[in-house]
Length: 290
Image (cartoon, rainbow, N blue to C red; front, top):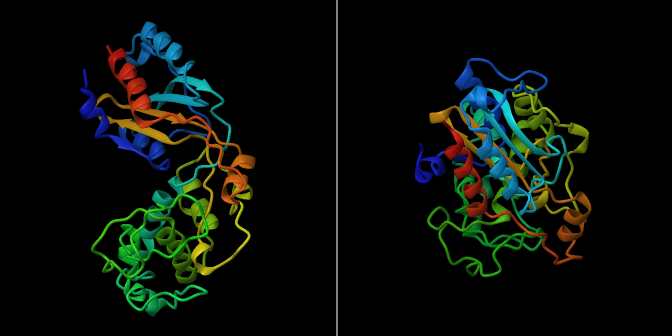
């Protein structure tokens, strides 16, 4: 049996790895639809899945899926429902950067000044020295308001940190990374996502026409790359190579609520499924492995 610590080390939060992991484990990628197998066929005890489902019913989970050996062995909720994906877009944007960094289209050593990145009210001289690589690791030292929700209200004072020296999770870095990506490649992020990830990896319910910026009325350069990645699954993907298993969990948020929240018209936060809750569910899947 895997320990919880070993399982947690396999936690991956970026959806594109799902098909890739299934392919690596089985030698083939899933087709247009997931093949299915019974829990018994993949070495799980079905009674333990019944207990798992009883616990799922107590949570605001909208979808949960277990894939083993490239086949779906368990599904809960509407697996095809698309939803707002929030900050998972940052991991996906980082993936898109890789190709263009390697072929020289994007130079990670370029600074904001080199690239002509600025704000309407101006960046500080020290902020303009931040390099693209600093933004990719959320260490730009730029604490300019982003105009989008999710930033830490207790950000350090502007100009107080040397770029590249202090990690501080924020939206500004990744919004600007989107702008840099589009200017350097000549591609819209949505199109790149479609061509370079969704189609090759067979995102089953990905729809390019659904992708859009949500709820932003202003259009400063810092916002241009922010996007909503909508796909089949949700906020947690757990890959367990040692038992050839993938677990997917989603807690959907309606588009309407996401727009209102981004516009600052509501402070309501739906009940969340936290990481520890998800890991308890994963424990039950691991324990069910005979």
